[in-house]
Amino acid sequence: MVSPIATDAAPASQSAGDRARLSENYDSFLVLLTAQLQNQDPLAPMDSTQFTQQLVQFSQVEQQIRTNQQLEGLAGQYQAASAGAALSYLGRNALIESDTTTLANGRANWNYSFAQQAEDATLTVTDARGRKIFETAGQTAQGNHSFAWDGRDANGNLAPEGIYRLVVTAKNSTGDKVNATMSVREPIRGVDFSGTTPLVITPSGSRELGLVRAVLDD
Image (tube, rainbow, N blue to C red; front, side, top):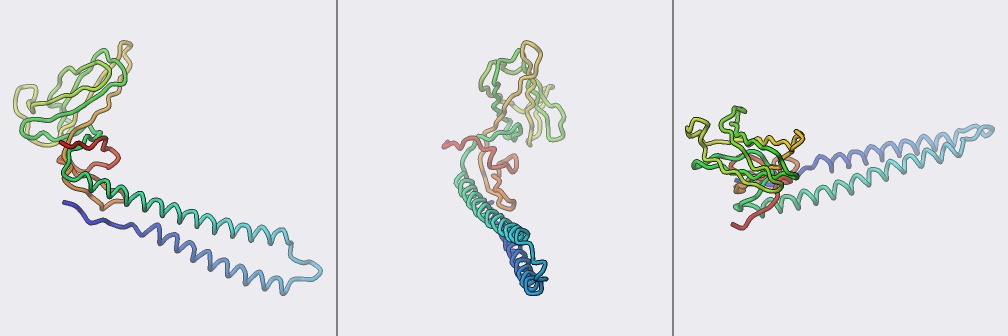
């Protein structure tokens, strides 16, 4: 289900408030400065350097507020572009960087890759509570690999459908840890606009838009 686009008015109202307070402070400053100039001691006039510094400080604050307004405008444009991109993914399969996916119809699939050759690798499937369900040896070559789990545990029993995590443990020939990058292929069923950035909704839950690595046609 697609949620309605939510607009974030807080930054804009904050800038407006900042400008209003700056304007009030500046008006008060001018009133006090005018009174001070009218009533200053002719024998000890106001230091012109201090007067100039105060005006410069006010000018710098105003410039900073304008800069913040421009940045907020750019942020709003980025959010709108992100929302449009997320909506274009609806109903399509996507490759998402994640170690969790859904076991459905007796099948769950992961992809994992190594940036370097590993000496040994172990693939461990855990459930939502972190309990080990299944374990097997994995591929060790540098590059991309796929792992398909048939949903059966170490005793051959079929695990219930749900969300499962793949843990890849690998070491190289010197015993150092080799990190794996994992991804899953899932259909995008909806888009969530309730937060500051849109989330895509897959069978495994909500995913950050930045984790989508590819959108597939099939």
